[in-house]
Image 1 (cartoon, rainbow, N blue to C red):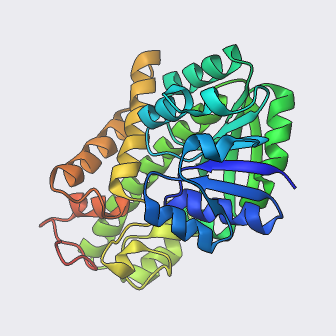
Image 2: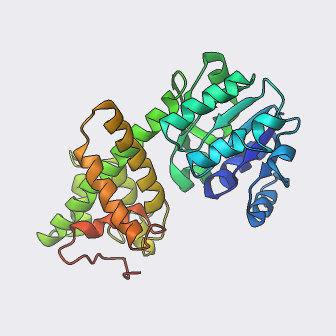
Length: 304
């Protein structure tokens, strides 16, 4: 059994930490939202009232936070992890942040005697619930192997992708590709409709042909075709437009910094931004399908 401090008990963190409890680990969980702490208690975690209390005596600290600013504050702010955890503690950051924040985290933690692995995940809420997430681990080889043993109960796949920041870099590039796949799927589904094709018949062709992708098989944006599609539930989010925009925007920023040209990623970023501008950031990212519709309306969405 390992003593684990879990910081951030939202949609991902609450589900992920529950698998560690089931695997026999002791998990102390903290979130700024009291209701989330109590929900985690229902999964067997021990709710605590501060970061300091969570990390006291912990062998491993795991972060699952919304933004890079939150990661920096939780790590190095007053009352943070680096102030209260024991030197040598392994810290895993499963958050999706910018590469610069990840590099800062590695440097700040290492300079104070801690071990740090960037450990972002792919698979969303469904993967977190089913323990089928893909973990991408970046850091010192020995630390990564320790991290692998910790995350395995939450994972379908675990990849050691390289040195510090390579985990988050892999996550951002992967989600940029997902965004582009959503763009292609959106345009294809709407063109098929306007050409008079039966949606199910076209989907059956695309999923076994050159138009196939994970997005097509999992999130096809037409109701009644794919069981897990948000189109079946008025585009309520499984992966929100807000979070998808964040990931793609971080990837585009990385491309701009390195001189890589990513026009398709820029386009889907801008389409997602329009959802945010209309207060639809909480809807599913696949609602960008409306961008391809001749009149902006799509099956399965009531316009709100």
